[in-house]
Amino acid sequence: MPEMPVMNEMPPEALEQVAAYFQVLAEPTRLRILNLLRGGEKNVGELALECGYTAANVSRHLSLMTKHGLVSREGRGTSVYYRLTDESVDALCDLVCGNIARRLERDASARAAFKVPR
Image 1 (tube, rainbow, N blue to C red):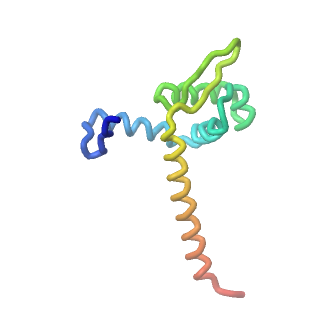
Image 2 (image 1 turned 60 degrees about the horizontal axis):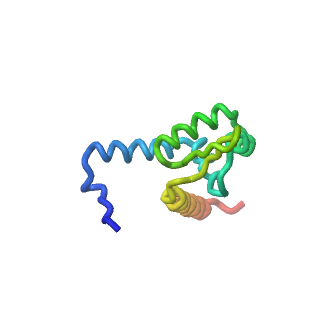
Image 3 (image 1 turned 45 degrees about the vertical axis):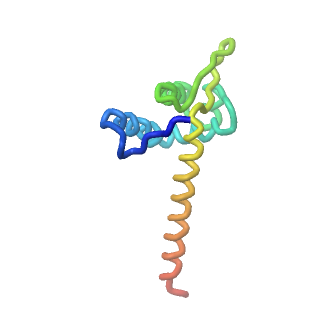
């Protein structure tokens, strides 16, 4: 298996692609859709129903995520099904969510320490 480049060895053009990838992940609607796809493949209608957005909105987000390689699509009859294709998305989202949860827990503990008993 070839060794993967580390960030400080990447040319500016590659860093621009990394930034674009993170921009795709920086939208709460897309994160919600990705989270739903963690449970398995779904079509646009199923995703729209489960997350409460219009099918057109979900489709627009899926198109962008497909372009950046986070999801793939497969047509079956009159429906198109989407699935996660980048396994690192799961690991990255879990890592970031875990970090944020720990930070919120520390912040809540710190606030509780300064509360005056009534």
